[in-house]
Length: 445
Ligand code: HEM
Image (cartoon, rainbow, N blue to C red; front, side):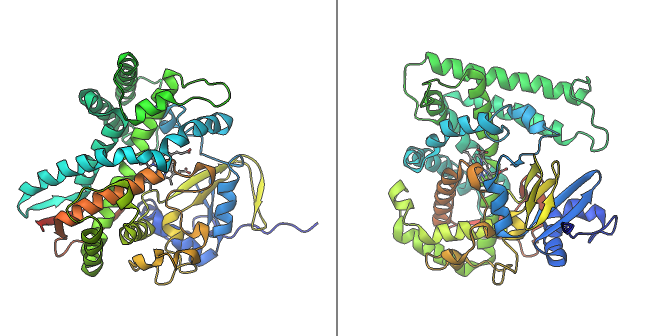
């Protein structure tokens, strides 16, 4: 029997970058791995073996075998926070939940949210009217806006004070998690001040969301929001609805998964448009032709072809979910190489979507790549900002619609300019962010 070849990669401490830079620039490091070792490479990070895949077929294999390549289980902070919601659960439980929730995000049901997204955007633009050409951090503004949108679409506005409580508690938990030492991580039951803070805020979250759900059950009025839709979904076989605990987990999951990614994508898109005035002008022309002074409708959004191409190209260069990790739950083989149970497997929209093996002039911002006649030439898993397989982002259509509306309204009413010497620096945390925000001068059109 022939011995399977071992996966190529840097040996021991011979890395391709100083270690301290790898953490800050992991997104670039992955591209270096591809250049040096090809479509599959292996690297040791402390006790872990990490296998990086840079071939669309290998990536597809991982996405299509969700029982073999599961979400990474250890660490589990997100799981502690989100419980058994869609983002963190696995196996049959996840599948049952996914089947319940997916229809809520179906394209046909999104129309009802156009108005809410438009209203939130209008509020922001009204506030911008008063900036009088002063500099504004649009990254911060986009975060505020998408948070407002997720609040309105999930809970409607009648629970604004509860929504603020949820947001404050969540931010405190996230900060406490982020500030935990990298080297000495005690289990959460050790009564450290940061752990007590997490526990206290977790209780606040549970109680507040519990109150919102109870209140909603008692109210007769119909609310056209995601919470109502989630409360009404029924299992096709058993006709069972979600328990309150499960509702809590799903509501929080959508809250967490549904706003920062969209905000980052918007901030990067505005940055790219400011850098490419000719593309901004073409975009504005389409917006005037399709929307003019009217409010966007679901039907009109379908006609914003160039706007959609701009958003897709922006998410090619700066995918907010820049890295998607998995863990092998059993032994497997990829491209003839052995993958061992317990190996971490990484795929990266950031690195793949800039790979010169699959993209011409990969560093250039060219929305044309996504025109109807060119898009078919892109291999399926050379572009995957929303992930893939059964665990594809459940909110992808919602996110695309949200970004179309925000971008359309904003570019119709404002022009924007970056400060002269601004250089974008990236911060690759769980999501890819602009490290120092994106400062812009806004000028009313
Ligand atoms: C530009 C915006 C967004 C991006 C780039 C994005 C990206 C992603 C990616 C890559 C995944 C898959 C993660 C994995 O396989 O490990 C994912 C999953 C998910 N996303 Fe999004 N997302 C966005 C917006 C949204 C929105 C608006 C919502 C909800 C309103 C949402 C809810 C979710 C949920 C619940 C999951 C878990 C799905 C499952 O495992 O069944 N996302 N997202």
